[in-house]
Image (tube, rainbow, N blue to C red):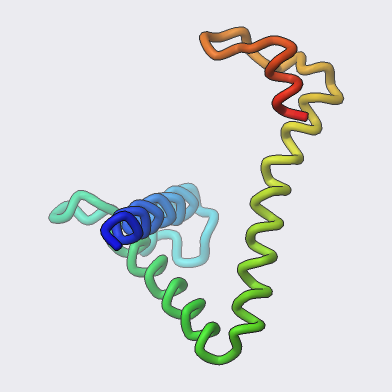
Length: 115
């Protein structure tokens, strides 16, 4: 239970900081409001509350229809997998020219792992 709580808080923090970054750059409606950082709390509090509101609305979807909630989560999992697949596929078919040779560069083993 502690592990789930800690992971949930970390995910909420990461999501709220993404919301804040989009708002800071003018990518969200209400950017001036959601792009603020609370000086008292040293965090993007408005973006955090927006994130919590979205989470609560998605949880309410579960109470309305478990099938709809499961379909929503299933689509999210598919989209997450696709978000990994697209850049790897582009990199692989372009000959991996943009892959930099750093500390973790694995050469052909890296290409094999990507496939």
